[in-house]
Length: 177
Image 1 (tube, rainbow, N blue to C red):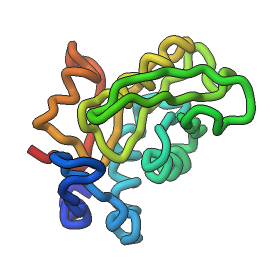
Image 2 (cartoon, one colour):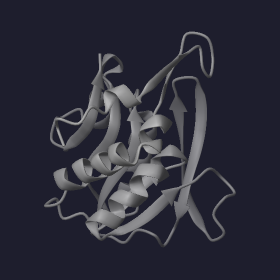
Image 3 (tube, one colour):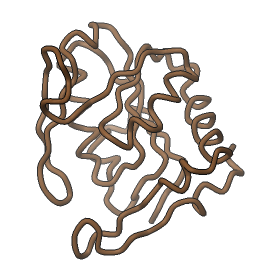
């Protein structure tokens, strides 16, 4: 899978959602069945022996890659959703984005103490979203097995936010300088 050309299936959109931001559109990768299959297989293979019990992925593009990886690993999938989207009691976390703030929620009974959670998203920019979800997961008594993403924006140094001590497995398919 390392030889697969994932990068050619990412489209850069300048000044979206605001001036100065270059949005990395991964939907062409999802539209290509070979690319999607290769991405799911590569991330799942990387974490196959990590003892993962569940995957948590933030809304919405994280769902698109997180759910098939959960299926591939044979583990449960937990959506981290925007407020008001989940029907039962939730726990929430608010966090800073590159261009604003946001809040995510998960069902309060979705994670059990001792679960080993793999956090999946389409892209790591500043690391703020996944860091916030990780804190929420840890507050619920689970441990972080690792982070998996399709794309990482290295210039924003998200690994310093996600894993300042360099002890957690962070795996991405594409590194953008």
